[in-house]
Length: 176
Image 1 (cartoon, rainbow, N blue to C red):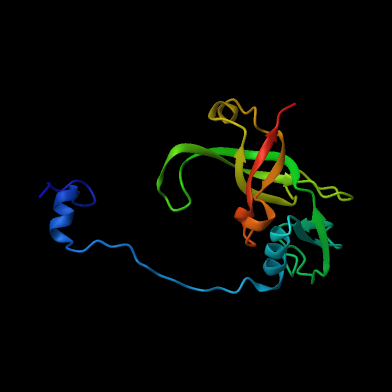
Image 2: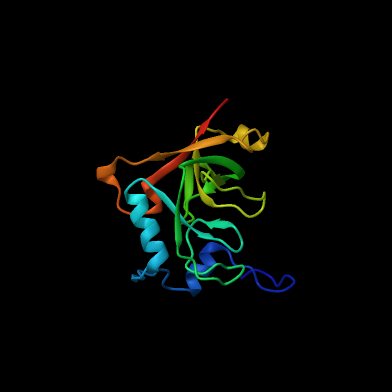
């Protein structure tokens, strides 16, 4: 065994495996109800629409939609359709998948501020979505060229959509 070093005893992989006889990934399966707002949002994605709810008190569009405004707690009943275009607010280079597997090719992930015709928003409270960005490379993120770039959703073909956020393959950059 390794010697004691401040705060614990480090183990090499083979030492760990000698002590812990069984290493396994859990095979947990579960079902979850999406609820009223998310169900309608997911149904919209299946149709190629991005839906949100509007709070007349705060004048905010919530995407993904909410049934109650998280700021004023008002019941939200007005649904709005956002454009599938917007601007990149922030972006990162991800070297790991959502399941923490190392990716062969890094992905660009970012927050997209969606356009909602007829509504205006502040720079910190806006209808947005976190998604993959395609048509941009690592240098575009490192040099910050990607920030404020126009993007448009690239949808799966209608017969392949299942009512999931992955019905949008990515948001494709529209370079000037």
